[in-house]
Length: 287
Image 1 (tube, one colour):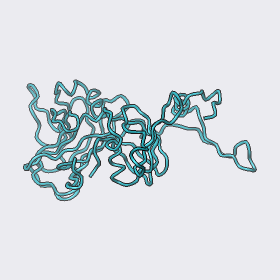
Image 2: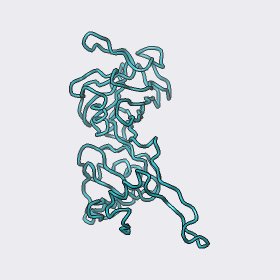
Image 3: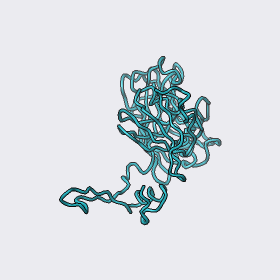
Image 4: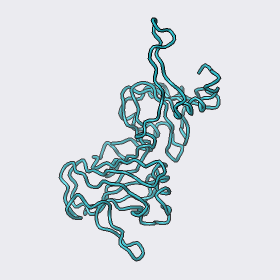
């Protein structure tokens, strides 16, 4: 940054200008040294809220021994009163009886927050039905290959009211965004589940990304997906107040040379990757 006065002297002021449309990008050429083409910045509405995703499997913590059986993806609206989602199977699954969202941190079992497919459950004096009408015929069905199991817009009316999940969709949204919720598909043989994480779309080259998971993690665990895909070149942490880069992590360097050892909520990472990918910020590598 060159410290131009209208742009402010901090990275936060610069980002605020980009997000509010008070910045533009121009290209200077030899014939037109003052700028030949120009475009104002704006926020693309589809990406004003983070994308959520989960990959469902048996034993997702041991990727080399498992197969992904389904995936969940969703977007929250701006005031967190609606979750638009899809839930798909990616391979044949026998005896599907129910699909639901639970509150619970990674590795912990938690109560049901909402039902996405299958029979409803009793909540007080009423039966909470799944949303929407099941695309498949009935609970207990065998799903063959890739299939859309459930989709729609989840609102407060569809929550179970489980105390630990909060009383509103905004409360559930907070759990989803912080990595403290998971999606499960119940079958006649047991449960298939996957933790919900926030998706950061990375492009080949350099990317600024905020770590949004709810906990501090060792750097190898935080970057597990990128390491398993073999696309990470180097990671740096960026200190916004000082406008300086702090620790660095190079997967190919001797461990003693890596000064970035963990990443914590809200920290800014600058990542160099060999290829584009959707990075789901979770404490495990995706299978």
